Length: 179
Image (cartoon, rainbow, N blue to C red):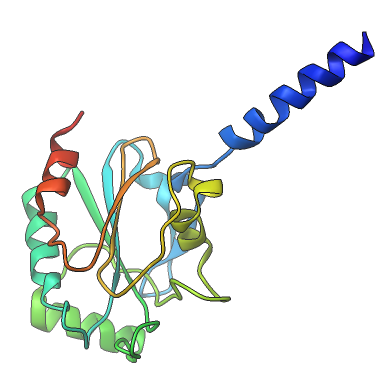
């Protein structure tokens, strides 16, 4: 009998560990103004998570992100995470980042506090986004500013769009159209 239980546990344990990947909704982050923001408040909506920077060649994507955010209001939430990991292209304070985004691109989508999206000090949300062991879908590496992660209405990672892909790429539009 003990041999049967041991065999069953040996088979089931990896499956249990694999299925315990967690959800996007498990995380709490801080807004650019320092307020707590529970990602669980976004249940039922598709979410695009983007690491942003003010002094990058891809910075004009702020305009595209804002247009997309307004166009799909109610269905899609875009969340910007300023990061200074690539070429020190986001050196500003929270107030400077907010002012830059408002004055230059009229950004109204949620902006979170500046974080690290790679390296030893990588934010826990980005650890989840980039690790198959945690997100249950795929490993990825944040390669540059304006990389976009697509999260479905159930808090599961669906795909990643790299910096060169515009927010309203064919891939993201297919994702938005899917139920």
